[in-house]
Image (cartoon, rainbow, N blue to C red; front, side, top):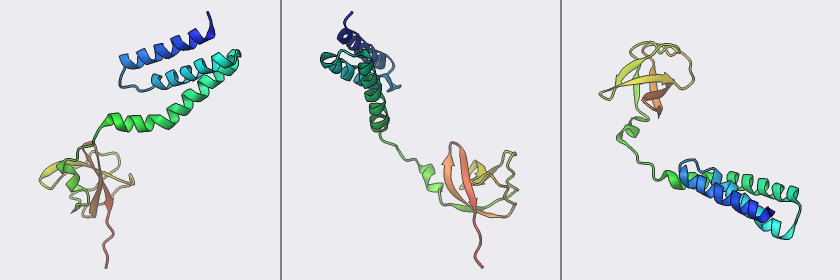
Amino acid sequence: MDMPWIWFIIAIACILFEMITPSTLLTIFFSFGALFALLTSFFIDNVLLQTVVFLIVSFASLLSMRPFFSAMLRGETVSTNTDRIIGTQFTLEDDLVKDKWYQQRVNNNTWSIVSSTNKEISKGTLVEVISIDGVKLVVKEIKEKE
C-alpha cells in the first residue's frame, strides 16, 4: 500500500475516533499530524521523515491548541451565590486539626472547613474564607492588628 493512503487512513481513523469519543479532544490533533505527513509524502518518499513530521505536528498542535479548544468546549462558567462567602471572616468554634473532619455553621449553612496551609488553627481564631473547594471552605488565619 502506498504511504499517502496510509496517512489518509490514519487521519480519517483519528477523526472518526474523535467523533465517537467527543469529550476526549485528543485524537483530532493526531489527525492534523497525519494530514501533514500525507502532504509530506507527496514530495518526500522517506517514511522516517514523514513519521517525524507526523509526530512534530501532532504534538505541536496538541500543546498549542488543546487549551483553546478545551476552554471553548467547556462553555461559560456560571457563578453561584456560594461565591459570596469568599472573603467572609468568622471565629472558629473548635480547633481545626489536620486529620480531623471539621464542620461549622457559616452564614446559616454548615460547611466543612480546611486550612489553606494544612496547619492546625486554634479555637477562637479569626479566619477568612479564601476559596471554596467542592463542599469545603478553605480558610486562612487572620492576624489581628493591635
